[in-house]
Image (cartoon, rainbow, N blue to C red; front, side, top):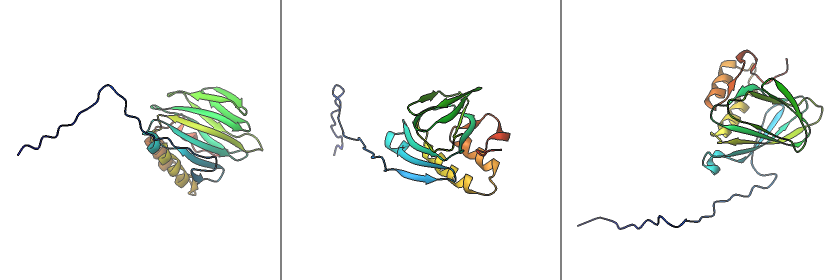
Amino acid sequence: MNNIVDTKTDYFNDVLENRATVIVPDEGEQLLLKDIEFTLKVTSEMSNDQLGVYKITLNPMAIGAKLHYHRFMDETFIVDKGELTIQVGEQVFKAGKGAIVYVPRFTPHGFQNDTEEKVELTLLFNPSQKREGFFRGLQETLSEEPIDPKKYLKLYNKYDSFPVDTSNMIPKRD
């Protein structure tokens, strides 16, 4: 008996499918740290690792990240509310509502809130490199007292983040 299955592959026409996701403002997994709130909007799983979209709220005087860079992904910051302080290389910018800061891979950058008001931003990673794991690990690592620098660096490196200065990588004010 011959078990050959005759399958016809159409090389000339697109196969359309509806895989869209609509995420309303209050939807998404929320991760809370002491001074920062992350809401996972478009995840690596949803986008096949192509795009990550996250809402970030920085409380007054909160540090999002010290100077670091990525090897395999680009990062885009869109300021939705407040004034974000962002360092790119040696330059420091004050980015107000509506500002967009595009940070390609291998560009050292860090960001923080230097004001007494909350800062809200949309953060995009392309490709996303399973960034949600980073945020979940960050929640765990930064909740520990004291913060273990070796564990923090291991998490950073696993998710394509490389501190410029490992002696000043923990996001806290000196």
